[in-house]
Amino acid sequence: MNSRATNDPTGPNFLFICTDQQRADHTGFGGNPVLATPNLDSLAATGTVFDRALVANPICMPNRCSIITGRMPSVHGTRVNGVALRPDTNTFLRVLRSAGYRTSHIGKAHLQNMGYRPEVTAALFPPEIDDARIDPFPTGWDRQESIERFAEGPVPPVTDFYGYERADIVSLHGDMCHGHYHWWLRDQGVDPRSLQGPANATAACPEWGQVYRTALPAELHPTSYVGMRTVAEIEAADGDGRPFFIHASFPDPHHPFTPPGRYWDLHDPADIPLPESFHDPHTTSMPQIREVAANRGRPPHSVEYWAPTEHQFRHAAAAEYGAITLIDEQVGAMLDALRRTGHDRDTVVMFTSDHGDMFGDHGLLLKMGIHYQGCLRVPLVISDPRRGAPRRSDSLVSSLDLAQTVLDLAGLPEFRGMQGHSLVPLLDDPELTVRSALLIEEDEQDDPLGVGMPLRMRTLVTEGARLTTYRGLEDGELFDLGEDPLEMHNVFGDAGATGLRAEMTEALAREMAAMADESPRPTHRA
Image (cartoon, rainbow, N blue to C red; front, side, top):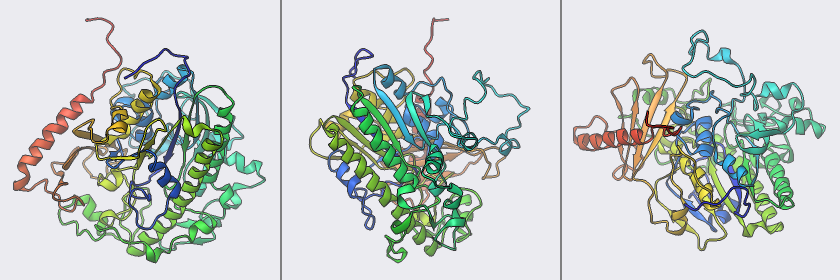
């Protein structure tokens, strides 16, 4: 990896575009037969598409923190939604900023909690029991994104936010977003309470309250806000003189699925095809998955995965596709701004999502506590104008790799304890591989398995298999992806798969050992 002195602003610019809860195949370039994403497709046509990009963790906060640190959730500490990333954490943004980059964030960060209600988890984690780690930081450090803070009155831009020089915060999802966006709406003369939420919806899917057409007009939708603010930031950075890193982070297409106006009607639910595995009989699935599948058509009270009917699935997909179309149009506006300012020639554009969604695979929807490919795989495109023809790579790559890739492209050194791999070699030769196995972690606050302790899952994915283990259970999941690419037959307990299970278990142990923390560095031998 190249290195250069800090404060030498000669590297490329970066536009890092991230969506929330978007599957790899919910794009045109990802092979979706219905959804058109012409702007994302044009980006893919100028760069490298990674067809086997997986997350380090399939949940928002842990994986977003892995993206900016290049470290596993069990190492950087944000192991579950609800644990804010420590403010003394090193990130690739801090390295860029030290090197003279203008670093800015627009949209959903979710590096801290979007709400602050410790009483919600007090029963699971009694406050009278001290933690192993003492918090030395000033009161309120972890409430930079909380909607309670923003509800008190207008909040100035967040500064020095994990290496972001300036952060424009959009909290929550769908049309219910808050943060700086909330006060922008008020500046437009709009009372958010008169337009946001299902009570103001102009159309809805009666079978699931998370699917409705928002009363917000398209130009006031959170997606349009992120697009508009990003274009303005590109234009402002053009006159700055420093190279820039702009993180544009859409809170969509995460549920609730609330496209505005014409985007609600773009797709007829009847035209949405069912996934090939929708009618999975789940004869070899884990007991908790079979239980969910047996209660088809009953939406959950929380945000965990559930089993929709065909009608519910198709209406959710039609609405989500409309939301993605609006995102794609805003991406087009960003790319136009780069061309208009001449920065299309010196800006690396990256596109990904923080995690996926079952969205009909195996007859399920949403996420949390489930590691089928629909939740693990995300879209990933890296378009570097300094490189040549478009490419596609089947190499196993991780969200963990993005931090080192940015630093490598910028010619800056990584910091101790980073655990990913730079993908720059794959931009030149997509046939290369950076790893033979990929580790995915997931911890949760609850105990959905009834084993007397919060859920903890560890998954290993290789070229030809996927193994998932659960703390407190002897059973697990093992899929031979060569023979069973749709993950329909769990062979964890099959006598004929004993060899594969042993091989994958040993590889999982090796990978977990390799991911032990190497920071901070020793100061002496003893």
